Length: 83
Image (spheres, rainbow, N blue to C red):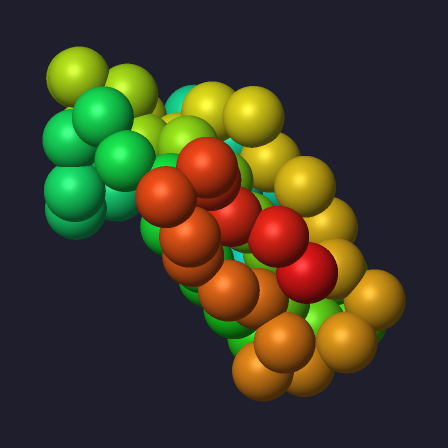
């Protein structure tokens, strides 16, 4: 019985570690809303909570991520996105 409890605890801990790691990984490859457009984003735990600019592909996938060094400074223009 104790062995099963230990395995369950270790498995749960490893699963939580994976979730924590995923929270700070790059948004590249993730889902985005507006096809073929530049967008701004801000994911808690990524890029020190600063903004990032990216391009949303025709398949609604985040590409070309540019990290900003500020919060709420990302802007979209006709030419793209900038920090």
